[in-house]
Image (tube, rainbow over all chains, first blue to last red; front, side, top):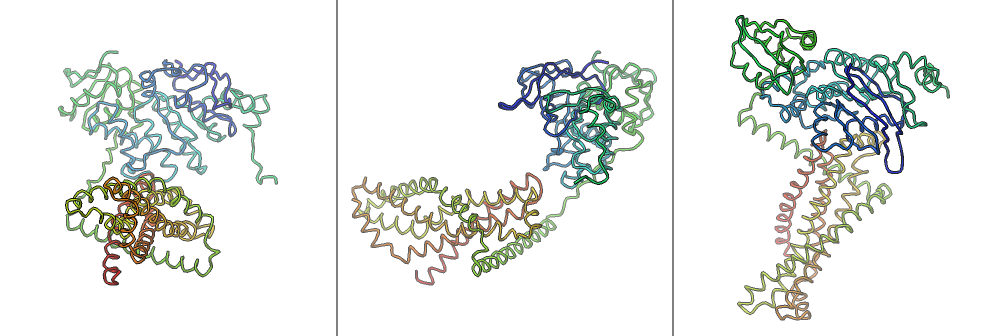
Length: 252
Length: 358
């Protein structure tokens, strides 16, 4: 198994505020890794640094063998061709149909002709179960469908790594369980490495090979392990996150 | 691995190389020339395959080709695509006949007109309620809108009016000097600025500045469901959003028009100094020509323009659809409608003033 993401001594922050200190981890090809932790611990911040939206204070991020930190526009482009990102709200282009949302990157970044692009885009929609909604506009779809369409768009250029920012945010438990199954199926059939930001315990158990747990107080990684091992962790903070059984009725 | 190739062999074709998005384009294009019905395709020499490669194999399979010797990775990708199931294509878009299109356009225009009438009615009823009970108006919001549409527009109105006065005076002074009549430039300038150009220029500037801002702000609120939030609290958007803007438009546009007239005349007076006409002469010519009737006619016109700018801006904002592009569309429609309605209002008022003998 080769390594596709390698993060070494990463420091991130905004202005005078440091959010993550000395983060180190690596992700192997084909793995599904979730980034989890309570609100404000830097999950989304870490993701946005991994996809190169924000420059880190210092450290190194290797994506598929290319160094992201300090890379020129050409090196950055080489990395961007190998990753796909699904943003939290879907971020589909509202003025285009679902199909056009997927064909857009293909027309710009592949040499295929219109017919092949059309076939390719429709098959991506088939993978996420939205084939019959190709001509719908994003605002005509439900929240769960928009998320699935956004995953199809993120996979348009056959990325090696897919980053998903809170795929189940704002979805009901049944829809989010469906989405989890889809993510797992895509990871297994398409051989894509996935990094998923989430704080849903059910999702982590359903999709993750390993989980990276961040913590606000130490501004970094509290633990990295399989979900089952984390649930048995001797660290009280990790265990309490994983065993956060909600009482039937919240105590007042 | 080497470049992807498609080669004919005894029993059919053989694919050699990596089936990836980057490599597949030429082969995919070439494959269109081949009749694939019952052709055997040997894939034993295929290395890596990605989603695009699987899509290509899917198309070959759909055209009747028999795929042989797929490696495990390729087989897994292809199976995920459900290769027996044909692609679902979009229905052909039926283009309407011109007469049908005209019908659709007419219907939407009539509906739009009906919505405008409804809006005017609602605005009038809300206004009547506020006149009876002034405490129902959000006074703080009204004052804030007065600042935004009125006070903050002063610099741009000043600049445009000054230049307008200078240009108008200069352009008319040259031909009038041929008749020795450059003294009467003051009369011309005063009359046209007070009766017509002051209110009109101010209204056009406000259409771009405030009309568009109203439409974009209310439109974004609509898209973000803020309007729905207001309604569920029991606020009427008409009272909460439209009235303060409407009243601010009606109050501020006449004031800005006065400012515009004054600055325009100042610009004209400066030019006339250059033509040897002193300020005092300019002023006496001006006051002999322009009377209170002209001034109040202009003010009434400015108030009407203010009503047009603010109401159309708010109306288009409230009619915004969903999505980011809808806000742009609403803003465009607002500005275009305001400009058209300004000219129409101006024409109607000109006829009315003529018959009243103003």
